[in-house]
Length: 77
Image (cartoon, rainbow, N blue to C red):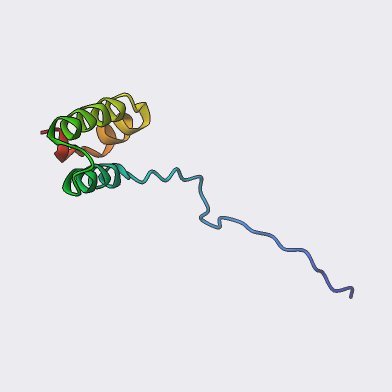
């Protein structure tokens, strides 16, 4: 009998998975750090936060995921 060196994988449980990691908190903390060190004044800080929120609001994948899992951005309150 000839040895076989082939493998068969059936029902391995592997699936196609899309992973989304919300890193928006890093952006907020970076802006807060700039403000705390005096690099951004109050006006610049609030303007930067508003611009960042506008960018996040345009992210279609983010909106779709938040609608699916029912999360809410606590920074937008």
